[in-house]
Image 1 (cartoon, one colour):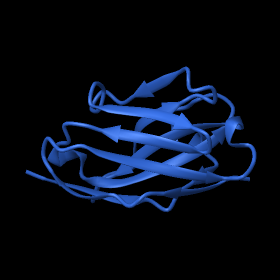
Image 2: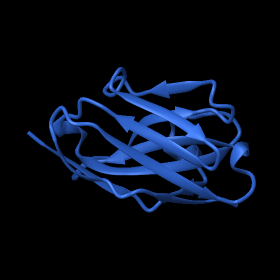
Image 3: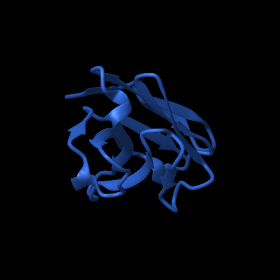
Length: 121
C-alpha cells in the first residue's frame, strides 16, 4: 500500500511557474509508476503526465507538453509547471499504480487528496 499527499497548490498569474510535489509513504515506492491528473470545474478528470518506475520513461498530455515536467526522486513525485495558463486551472491529483505507466486514470489504484491550482490571466 502507498499513501500519497500532495503539496499545497496556489494562486498564480499566467506565465508563472509552480512545482507540485507528491509525497509517498510506504517502502515500495519504486514499485509504482506515478501519474498526475487534473480536473477543472465542470469537466472530467484528464491525464496530465506519467513517469515510469525507473523514471526513464515519461508521457505528457499534448496540452502541457513542453511546459510541464514530471520527475521522481526517493519517495516523491514532482510536477514542474512552467508558463502556466488560465486553462491550467484545476484540482491536480497525483496517483500511483503498480506496473507500467498508463495515461488512464482508471488504471491507478492510489490517489492523493488533490490540490487546487488557479491561474489568473
